[in-house]
Length: 165
Length: 317
Image 1 (tube, each protein chain N blue to C red):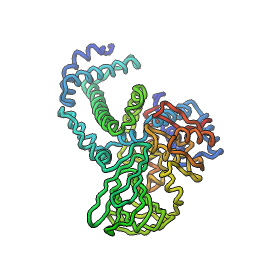
Image 2 (cartoon, each protein chain N blue to C red; image 1 turned 120 degrees about the vertical axis):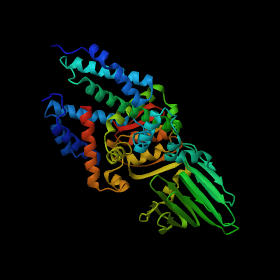
Image 3 (cartoon, each protein chain N blue to C red; image 1 turned 180 degrees about the vertical axis):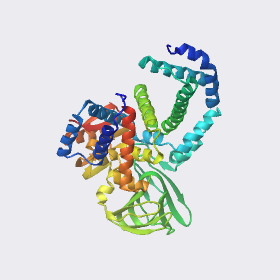
Image 4 (cartoon, rainbow over the protein chains, first blue to last red; image 1 turned 90 degrees about the horizontal axis):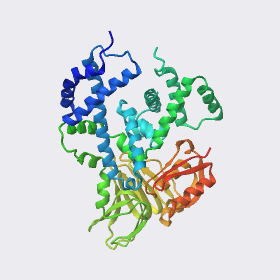
């Protein structure tokens, strides 16, 4: 039996998914967008693996949609932090639109990369990568051992490289 | 096995290399080992490409912006999520607490813009010089003369007071009691730094009330709880900025670039790979572009201008 095409899954599941997303994000327009994105993801997977079909469409769609919701909130939170930070850095208004777009996209990418790291690992990694502090300086500042700093750095690198693979 | 799944062992080894590189510049021997490691297989190459992509990404982000945005607090993340869920307007208050200095900065009694160095004569005749991007409040009453340093760096030459009032410089980390004197105070997020050019001052930390006397030609840093051991401070070097100069004596390039960055709008970043190169010289703070170009002539580095406000110093290899 050939797998049900995405159209069939869409017709059957679109309505409840949209309602479920509305519960999560509290905005009808946003829920509709995220529902579309969920089906686009399914199409993308089928494009790569033509015989792919979710055995339990409901659970599958919910998992994908949930990931999109988390990412949506992460980006909203990032946007707000970014707007606030920029408001306090007048120098950033002097750079061109392209440069700002590049910075924004890079921040978004890094934020998504670092999102699952624990607070301590994330902080240590950023202090090293952005502030350029030495491991010893980070250890002193964060009140942890040098070994912990190195272990956290290793963990952060493994995490990022795995996601960038 | 999925052929495209990331191989854990190779990734862990790549991470080990990155940790090492970040720790110290690789020796020639280590560089050869890394070359050999990379040449082992296509997957090794691929892991290293991911590492370079990661490095590049961080290079595109201005440090201050990246730090405040990417390390925003978890609570703030959760609150924002709640606020968005409820379709409320995002309160900016939480951010103002986090970035409190910015607001204080603009309502301070005296402040300087980036690159500006300004001299102020206070009511008692004391001379106050504010370095770039600095802010102070001044409180004089019948009992004391108090200067509150909110941001940046100041140089003070005290005048003898007709009312014989004590003079203090207060920072978030503690107080500096002037004992008739010339000195500089510089505020960073983690500590305050005092260098004395004439006579002496006394440091009092804010939470532990530790006390340390610093005399001419000495300097020290203190946090809210601790005072670092007293070190030597050349008065001409410590006050060079009051004459629009930066005097560097065998210091790492990363530190020199960080110093110059204080005087520039936009951001100036040093590639960590060359941050440990050492440098000496006298630079004019009035034009940091000239200073950068001098550095590029002295060391094997290039100054890359994406725009006037976005400059990176990189290896020119």
